Amino acid sequence: MSFLSGRVLFYSDRQYGSHIYRIRPDGKGILRLTRGAAGGYASPAWNPYGGKIAYVAGVDSTDIYTMNADGSQQFNVTRSEQGANLAPSWGAYWIAFASDRDKDFEIYVTDPKGKVQTRLTNHPGMDISPAWSPDGRQIAYASERDGGLDIYLMDATGKEIKRLTDHKADDNNPTWSPDGKWIAFDSTRDGNSEVYKINVESGELVRLTRNDAYDGTPVWAPYCDTIYFVSHRDGEPRIYGMSPDGTGQERVEKHNRTDVSDLLK
Image (cartoon, rainbow, N blue to C red):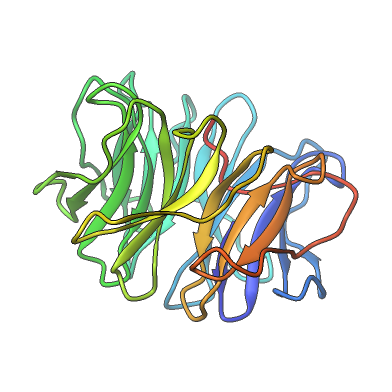
């Protein structure tokens, strides 16, 4: 799931395979952006400074693609033809993503044409779910290098690594607040997946959702005070929105089929 200027991107299997859709935050104006009977489209991410979308496509193997906001001019950026390239996050220019091309999942960055693809992390533990900071200077990501998945920060060159969370449960899917002061993420630290936020400087931790069902894969809208997330509280994955303090949790889209976003599980 991704948000830009009043438009939410998500992927859903409502029409014969997983496809990418665009919808307004009020749940109206839905538009399917990808085609093809096989489906296999996931993890859409807006370019924050333009109308391009990065996303994942593939079935047996996956690559990072880009397309225009209307679904036209689809372009294979990574062109790996094997393995998994997942979870694109678009900065001002570079696209960060996770890939197992070197046998274990690491964080890479690429230019939009795929001409320069650079590995940023190098650790036997899995590194996934990259998220560019609003100023483009840091990347948040999830890593199991010290046991379970925790949230880490690094600079745009893969240096100055900082561990942000420290818990035996899994913390995953980081997303930045528009001012860069907070990171929302999901965690199983209280028994099932819930959405939390943590202050980047102080480490203050705030739990935002409290539900017996799954709540996770948050996306912090860049130009408004809304965190979108996926919840199973209605029996199937649905998109919800809430204020950054966790209040006002409301379902955005009311289709009967499965709606999911940026799932790396």
